[in-house]
Length: 266
Image (cartoon, rainbow, N blue to C red; front, side, top):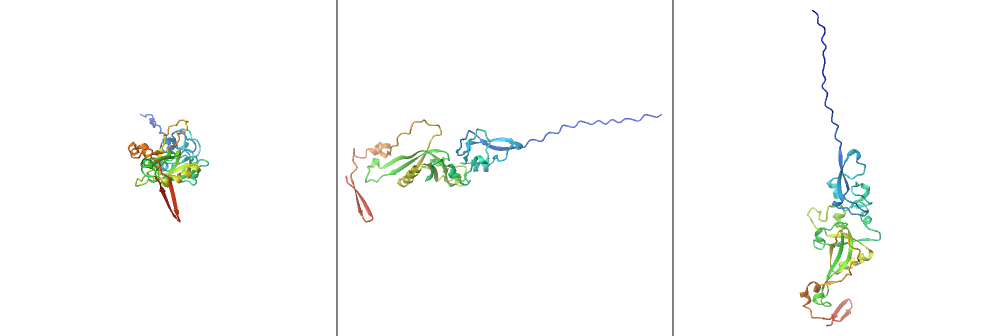
């Protein structure tokens, strides 16, 4: 008996669909808030956004610890909206040539004052902060009674800080960014030519201190007239040590060659 040939049927199992490769993303830096031209960048001015590698245009600043350090105190060249990516051409980094001159407003000058942990607000001053500059000096006992020998005055009102130490000017992360944690020793201020002269003279008269102004928008009222604050204004007990209404005596200057002597008459 002859059987017909068998037909072999091969069943092919459908293969699982191949997953598409995940898109590669990069982290780029963007403006965390609207940044006007001339802004000196601080950490809170910068945010991070993830973009597809294909969408990351040339020149966008990639996020890294080194990049954030370099951008500390960098100058924004043009207005940036919130969320707008930072491009290398939009900022002038502190290590770039001409940085200090570019930071200055027209007809302004840069002058540096020495500070310590106390006079420099404990190292918490950043470029872009607004400050007042105070002068404290001790007058000669021959021309001032005890309660009026120590006097404090505001030399500059509402000026902008443009650099803190040479280290911060070169892009360090903060005023105490040195490896040993040293507090800033110098602060550079943006002033007018006349204010620069006042600072130079004040530095020879006594001790300079900085006070940080609030970031909140202040009223348009003119600042109060500057007045001197004497030791007797701060300490009533000190004022009571002086005779009432004691006049300051006349002075006579005697010059003998290169020698000068002041004599005060009671």
